[in-house]
Length: 66
Image (cartoon, rainbow, N blue to C red):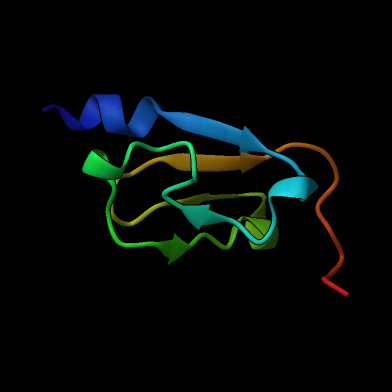
């Protein structure tokens, strides 16, 4: 598998998806990796260290959780 494919895969998420974890519930169990928190709210995007999926926050970044 080439790294080019991994670097081009991304998912746009909104505030309703926070806190964000990868893999998401939509991922098939057979292809899942350990669950990890993705800190997308800090910079507006973050990459999963396991599968390389880039998560991009759409809209205004939240100021904090209540």
